[in-house]
Amino acid sequence: MSKYISITFIFFTLLFLGCSDTKETETVKKVSQNLDVFTDKTTGYTWIDNNQTKQLKKDWLDAVSYCEELYANGHEDWHLPTKEQLKTIVDKSKTPAIKSGFKNVTPYGYWTNDKIDIKDGYVWALYFNHGGEVWELRTDTNYVRCVRSTND
Image: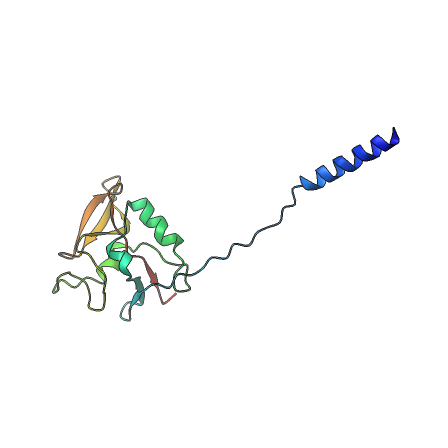
C-alpha cells in the first residue's frame, strides 16, 4: 500500500511542477527594417520614402497603428504625421506637389493624424496632386507616410 502512496505522491508532485505558474519567458527580438527615408534638414523630420508609400492604403485606424508599430532604421518612434507636419513637404509649384528629394509619391490622399473637431468620424487627408487638405471618413482608405522627428 505504501508503494502506491509513494507512486501517487511522485505523480502529483511532477504534475504540480509541470503546471506551475512559473513559465519560461521568451525574449522576442524585434528586427529593424531598413527602409528608404527622406530627411528634411529644414524641419528635422525624417519621412519614410520607400515604394510602400505609393502603394500602401489603409483606413485611418490601421494607418495610425501601422506607423506606431513601425520599427525601421533603428527607430521605433514613427507616427502618422499631423496635418501641419505633412504640409511641410508640400511644394505647390510642382506636380506632384511634394518637395524635391522624395522619390515615392502618389497624387492621391495621404492620412494625417488630425481629426475634424466639428465633424465626428472625419480626419484630415492631404492630396499631393494639388497640395491641399480635405476631410475624409476615417473608414475610407488612403495612403500612409510615416514620420519621426530627428530632433527628439
